[in-house]
Amino acid sequence: MAEWDALFSERLTSVSRPQPLSLRLDLAGGEGVEDRVRDLVERESGCCSFFTFTTTPAEGVVRLDIVVDRAHEGVLEALAVRTAALGADR
Image (cartoon, helix red, strand yellow):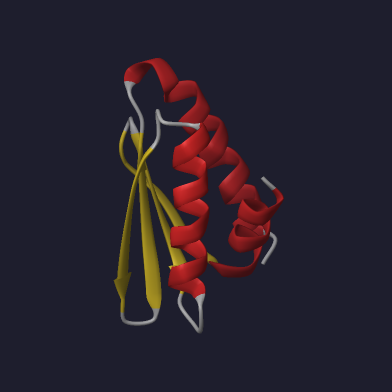
């Protein structure tokens, strides 16, 4: 959790909820950011298989889409709130 918190507090540029069961995070790009995100996603997927992550790099940004099933909507909402709070501290 501490690694996610550090990433979001350092790199988060926007948070959105395109659908009720999805969360979209845009992270400022830079040296090693995409690799860092992919490493965290891989480890998180190993322990919390209910998350589906999609990482999309673009010019100056790494987009992270997170999707869950209906049973885990509350977990996603808690993540959205936590993430937005960390990004607001930037």
